[in-house]
Image 1: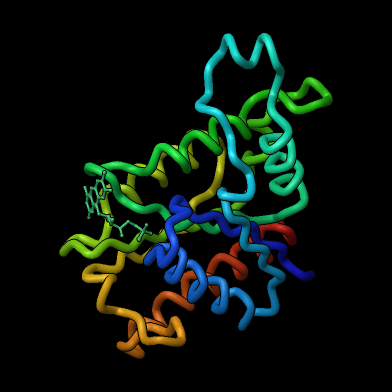
Image 2: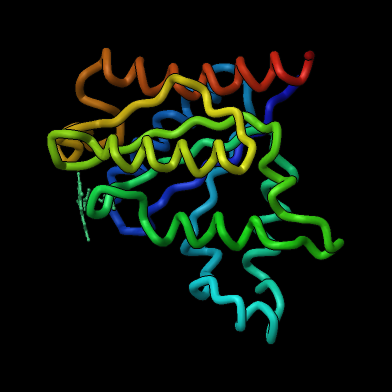
Length: 193
Ligand SMILES: Cc1cc2nc3c(=O)[nH]c(=O)nc-3n(C[C@H](O)[C@H](O)[C@H](O)COP(=O)(O)O)c2cc1C
């Protein structure tokens, strides 16, 4: 079975270290014959979730598109940057919108349930965004995802990549790629269960 992975980054910043880390993990998934689609939230600009907005205007088109993308994929790979000890509002807002009712009226939470996920993070700081990574794991678990224990938080991330976007320390590159590979392996096992 070809596992289809949706990769989301919680930063849209040019030169984002989380995006670079996500690219490495996506390559790891590719090594295991998965099909990975990296989606930038910059291409799915959303208003901040507001119940009144939803009632008046419905679920916006970019959220519908993200719902459709998640529905088409078996697994979710998330790079979660850390702002003030937590995940970014950008990422959480996208997840909140995806969880709202689909066009069919069914809950968007269904799109997450029973699917497998992995979370990684990168920060220039010494903790590599681990608090964000752990917080994001909790959000995805609340939505019914099976979050694999493998993850990676990359410290001193601003110095960690070479010009080609590979990690300078090869054992680190191997470990991050292994997160992508483990995600694929787990999704494959689940599909057979
Ligand atoms: C508002 C704000 C708060 C931040 N708080 C933290 C923090 O709590 N821990 C941390 O490790 N880095 C923190 N940072 C630094 C980010 O990790 C850094 O900007 C990183 O490059 C963001 O990810 P990106 O490169 O993928 O955009 C903060 C940055 C901003 C803008």
